[in-house]
Image (cartoon, rainbow, N blue to C red; front, side, top):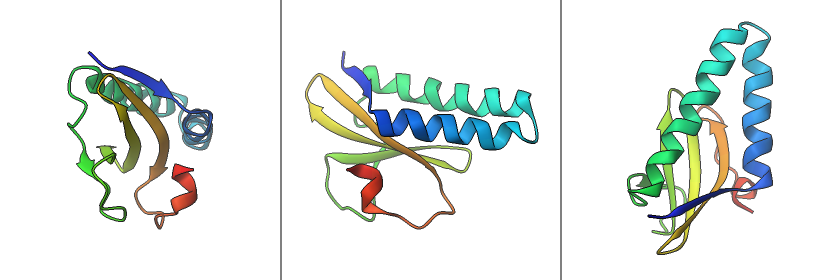
Length: 99
C-alpha cells in the first residue's frame, strides 16, 4: 500500500477550487472537493491508475480526472505518491504546476 502525500501547492489548488465554486454553491464546492480527495485515495492501492500526463510523456508524472479537474501526481517510489497539483481542465498546461 502506497502513502499518498499532498504538496502545499496541491492543497492551495484545492482551497482555491473550493473557494471559487463556493461563490455559487457551498454544497457543490464541498461535493467537488470531497470527490477529488476521494479519487486520490485510490492511489493507495493502485498507484498507476491514472494516465501519463500527455504534456509530459514521463511515466512518473500521471493524472486522474474528476469532473473537469485534472489531479496531477508523481510516483516518488514503490510506496509513496505525491499529489502535486489540481487544476481545471480548460486551463493550458503549465509546467510550474508540477514544481
